[in-house]
Length: 90
Image 1: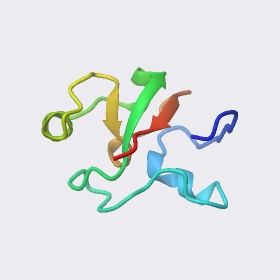
Image 2: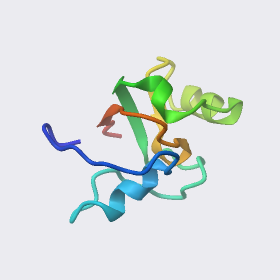
Image 3: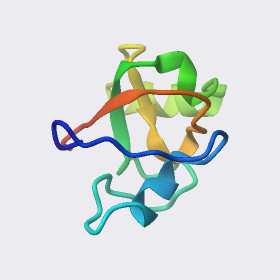
């Protein structure tokens, strides 16, 4: 995200809802079903605040070469508390 930008979403919101809170898209989204990899994010803080990744998401991230446990697919995250993320350039 642009440095210093803070966005508030209701608890339990999908992270994809961020696009409705900003004038310009911040996270690229493609399929929204965890199959394209357009929305890979690196979680800098609050990893547990994005819900638990299911095995399919983890496997897909590994296929993309994102084996570090700090990566998630934004379209698969549900915001449970505060988190800081960085968009991963493809």
